[in-house]
Length: 64
Image 1 (tube, rainbow, N blue to C red):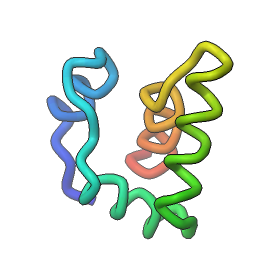
Image 2: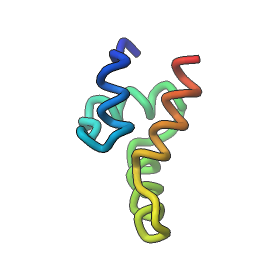
Image 3: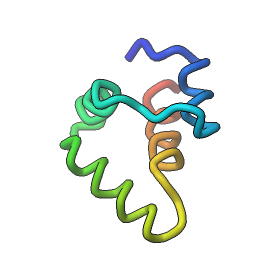
């Protein structure tokens, strides 16, 4: 996906939020709609966790 490790680190720390372009790349790689990612982020926020945790798990899957 050509995302630098420093950018991933900034997402992990909550310094940056992923752009829609990044979300589109994730959705393409993971084979899901962008709306699915956004839905789970919203649901996660209701339950005390946010998109960072979800995206980190996705990043680890994709980059390993």
